[in-house]
Length: 380
Image (cartoon, rainbow, N blue to C red; front, side, top):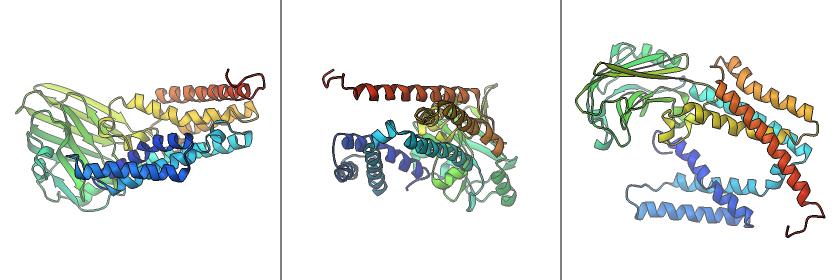
């Protein structure tokens, strides 16, 4: 995995070729032929990036993960009937398996959001240390403070033991005084504390948006760390004094930007239901529409529970099990892990998805019985 976010690339590359693998398998291709075709297509893409396409890099990791994603999707597609139209016993197994996946995803999210476990030397990083001009802040950073202590340029910060303890607890403040630069085309860091080569506590600029990155275990796996974004925070003109303040405490992120006598601020509470924050592309990971995307994420995780619960032989038992599993994830799990309680939008998304899954299974069962009826001709 290359780069600080190589884990995100692996995840997205696994998904990228999954539709190709599933489609070819459903079209009647043998599994081995699907894998070979996916490998050849991926190899052709990487070869073009290596020889023809400028600004792109070929990667062996992309070839392996693209092929693996297609292979897994083809294997699942071969069993689509058992998954979509299961027997009561198979539905019970699928429901149990997905319940474990549901709770496991929440558990993994809490683990990834935990700031402990980042090991290595801590260094204070400044924009002029960037290796390429395109990744440097075009304005000027005047001073940076972490937990009230002035940070040096390109050196180990003072009182590293206290700073390390603060980062491990997930309780830190960061303040930056700078002169504004022009809008950026990509994410550019103004200042960062880095562990080894990974920025763990940082201010960035994306267009005219201000970005705050806080430490988490996700960075060990080269995934996106919890990040918050403030829209149109920087002034439109260059050379204007700007002050940025950020903080993380008890799982809550806060970011404020002040310039020209005006102050803008935003905040976000980390929750177990925000696992998607670790894996999307850059433009989606920065905190836009967090509640909407979290609701969609929760709905996607709960929908299969509602679908397979409806295939269970006893409806009352199925409803009780479905309610218990959803409640355990949205109510019991946050209480057990002392995390922030689930937002009402997440409850709404979960209940709606469970109901849609249940209705979808009834419709699938109706179509299965109708299509199997002797009174229905092959052309109708």
